[in-house]
Length: 267
Image 1: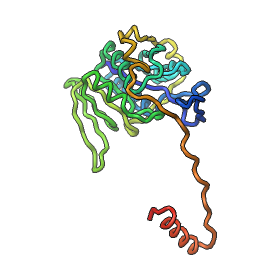
Image 2: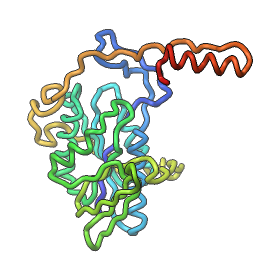
Image 3: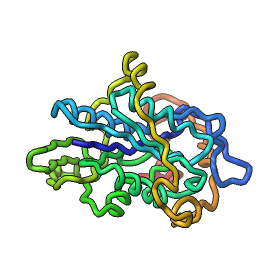
Image 4: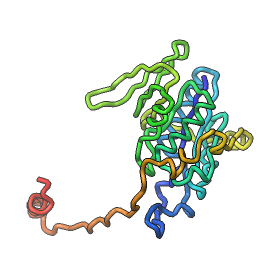
């Protein structure tokens, strides 16, 4: 089975963000980047499927949306975890695109790679759109199941059973393969790259594909193909300082209830 995993490199959660002077993006020059946590679940699941079947191939695919990002590091991390090869989509034409143009480029690459199963994280933790995986499936005309926290592959029947949490229980969806699955926390526990894995990753193939490689017209990708435009990026409002209510417990509780009722208006 050929499994493809779409991954994104995102700013590390402990990074301190600064907005550019033009107010249209964050300054990425000095940030540290990591593999999107939800995509790590997808990589781990792909490796487990391959290990259970005793054969197969896992390819990781990523798009570099900004020249400042060293996306190769994220892909090398996935190779060190056990993926077999990686493909990086890198071209100035891809810059300043939105989730739709990202999906256009990824879907064009996936057509070339001809996979049996495509796995993505349910969303990226930087923009939180949760749209790219579903858009890729629609562009490819493939069935998709989102926010999956358990997955069973039936290679002989060419089907998959996907389980996901809903309000009143667990929903089980059966889909034919090839299909696209977006992965949720709880699906597995991603492994750490081992030292031998890190050394082997340096020798594994990492191809770089451009817009021309994918055969995409310039107006379909990057800022020219985007459906969305960023108007302004600004930090969230500063949180007000906390208040300490003096007095003994009975007095403090009575005052707290009054404040919640009269000022906060939450009760």
